[in-house]
Image 1 (cartoon, rainbow, N blue to C red):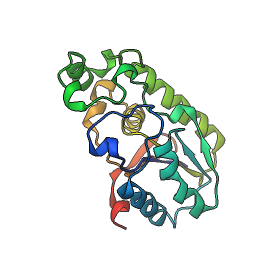
Image 2: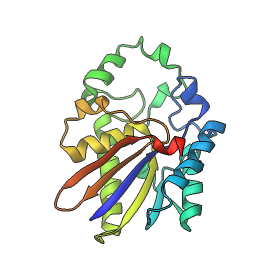
Image 3: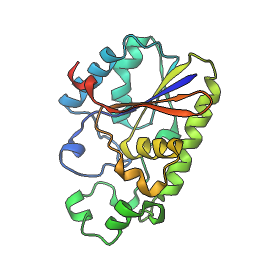
Image 4: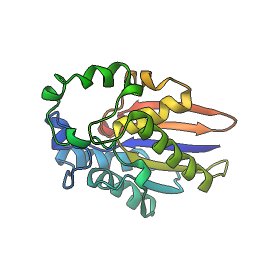
Length: 202
C-alpha cells in the first residue's frame, strides 16, 4: 500500500499579504514559514520515506529541505507538482481580483475557468494527477511512502480526483500552509488525513 503525503509549502509574505504568487521567482518562506518547515521534519521523523519530491519553486523547495535532510534524502524536483499557471493574475492582490468577472466562476464552477494567459483548472488537475501516477509507478511497494511538497490548489485538485469529487467541488476542501494531507493506495485510493496542521505546533 503506497502512501503519498501531500504537503503545502509554508507561509511566505505573499500568503500574508493575500497576493497570488503563481510562478514568480524569488518568493521565499518568511520566518514563520521556515519554522513550519522545521516543524514538519520533526513531525514526520517516525515516518520512513522513500523519496521527497517538490515543485520547482523556491517556497516548496525551502519547505522540503529540512524534511529531506532529516530523512537522509535528496529533494527531487518534479515540474508536474508546480503551482497553477495563473498568467496575468500573477503577483496581483486578491482584493482586486475578487472584483473580476472570472472570480465567481473560479469559486463556483472552476471546471469552466481558465486564467488569462494561463492554465485551465481541468488542465492543472490532469497535470498533477499525471505526476502523482508517474511517481506511484516508481514506488509500488506495499510499504512505500513518499512526500510531495506542492501548492494548495494542486493538493485540493488531486484529492478531489482521487475521491471521485467533481472538479467544481474542489474549492470546498481546505489546505493550510505547511499542512499534511495523505492518500493511501491499495485496491482503491483512501484519504487518511486532510489539512493536518499539527506539525506547525510540534
